[in-house]
Length: 108
Image 1 (cartoon, rainbow, N blue to C red):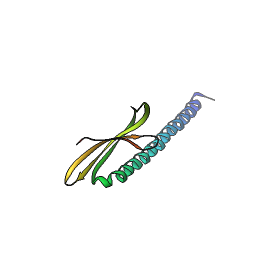
Image 2 (image 1 turned 135 degrees about the vertical axis):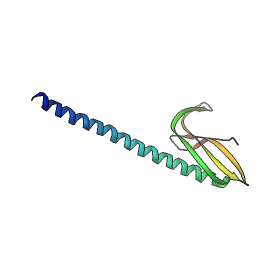
Image 3 (image 1 turned 90 degrees about the horizontal axis):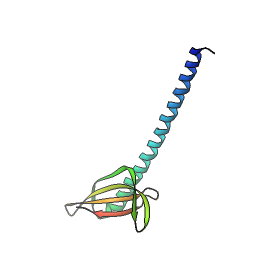
Image 4 (image 1 turned 45 degrees about the vertical axis):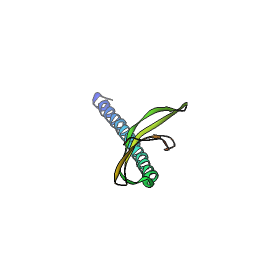
């Protein structure tokens, strides 16, 4: 096979590799979006009884959190509520595996 033929084959193989990487990221991004949507829904379900929810947020990156000699991988997040006409804000740490709120701290 000549150089031109090898270049074409290398280009096709390279394009397929790039497409596979992009496709993988797309699937991961979809999975992350579903996880974050589930987290927001869970926060809304858990905090609705506290007051009217004004807003929620979840950091997309996880971090390591230690409490009671236990190590967790957590998402950081928060919720803002309106209760009796006043705003209340809570900082949250959510276990990335079980999606359970493991820390709820009122900050305002």
